[in-house]
Image (cartoon, rainbow, N blue to C red; front, top):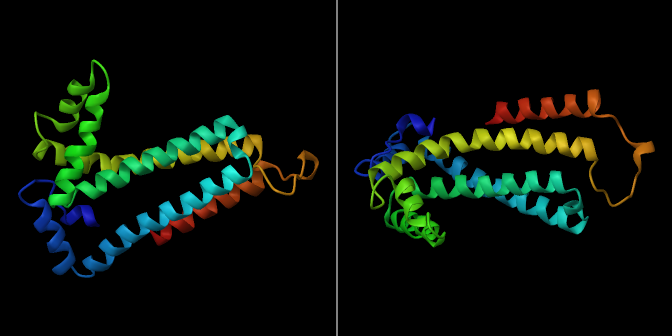
Length: 189
């Protein structure tokens, strides 16, 4: 919905966000849901990471690394979304954070210019960030599926220490509940 009204152009980006907020029917509400939903997503993710550290979930390396990948991709998506309104804070955030790539030896400067689409943060940068802000969440969903598969293969770490003799098989119990959860989440989004 927000993408229908957003313009990924440096001249129109900020005004398109204002347009969504003021002129589009319930646009302010959708924008607030989008922003606060991302904050809630991170709050739950931090709680999930804290639980994983407390119960030693990092010992299951494949599950843990897929979770770290989800976290990093989520951080990238949040940063890309932060840049899109193209205010002063957004512009300088894009400039400073993408310039961190220049610290990579040999290829850093070339990588920064590739991300920018030129020699400075400008219109190609905003267009790329808009496209990736849209695409990366689909990649996150794919990595979440991998995360769930790893979790169901290894079993979750639990404080009760319940062993394999007392476990429930992945299919049909967990696979059906996961699919139902995905449909319910999709319905509300």
